[in-house]
Length: 260
Image 1 (tube, rainbow, N blue to C red):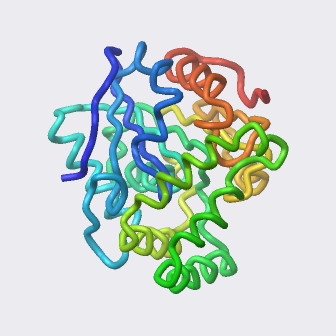
Image 2: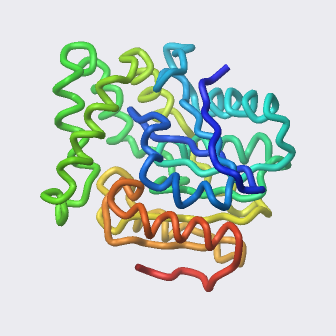
């Protein structure tokens, strides 16, 4: 069973899935604003945080099945699921496998698109770097997740992200890298899923190609898109705005494709 924490007093369950080399601590800045309206289920994905690593390759489908075990234990019949980056890939796999459980899905600085061949090769090559010098891997990769325009004022958050990354199980990091490299394109999920779909993206996101995602989004009334003036880590870069969008969109309806 994956490690998880529950907080909040809201009627709607909101499952929060962190990204690569993160854990449930990443939600601390936006949790107070979300916990008033939602019951938050913050899950540590396989090989991250306090959850054990299971395989040499942790596929997104496998992670989704482990998330479902938590949902079943808590006896939720419907959930709102929100995933940051890799957590978004897991959310898509979850929605594909268990659509009847999904009331809403939020891709939080994530994408439906598969890795291109260049990105896959970068992930595969990173395995040796992680083995040889994990600290260097973390120190070089984490700053690129934040907007260059605000790195000076985000220095504390960058250091926190590094600290969380360095605490991650190295085998879990490698298993997640390989799992992400093999994930398929899941854009079709957005066509087929009847639940509310919320996309929150970063204009300066170096990890996810926001422009490419926007090009393939279906024109459906259940899909709402926000592009923020930040990088890949909206939970640290723009926590108040992100929380406001999540609260508003998952509880009410607003016009499509507003930009902050």
